[in-house]
Image 1: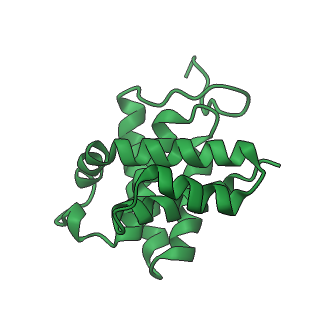
Image 2: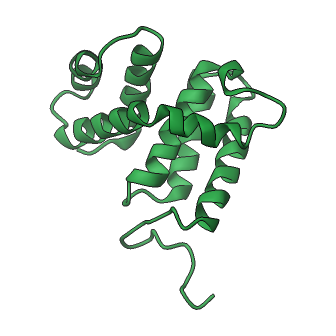
Length: 154
């Protein structure tokens, strides 16, 4: 069974282990992702891709986040909030089959579960602004049924 929520949680824990603990992606894939998702190969693949895209492009993502946090610095953000924002940007850009609304809702839920009381609202606001920017720049390329949010003749 493909459980993306569990895959996102495993990816977040893995990204945290890489960012804060200095662990290697291969190690966290084995010890966190594969250990927690067990025999659900689709979820393992999803979490691995999310981990790698988020870690590989973190500097680029931090520049994007910086543009949308007024009078603040990325380095001063709560670490979990920053990692959740990076993960969501990865999903926006590299996961064609995940609707942007789902990405935002899942990010909000992760923030509520793993970060501060106000993190859900913060993550929602930042991701909404980033999504609007990406749409204007034509960076959102979603495919499949239910993923196209507006018709081409609008």
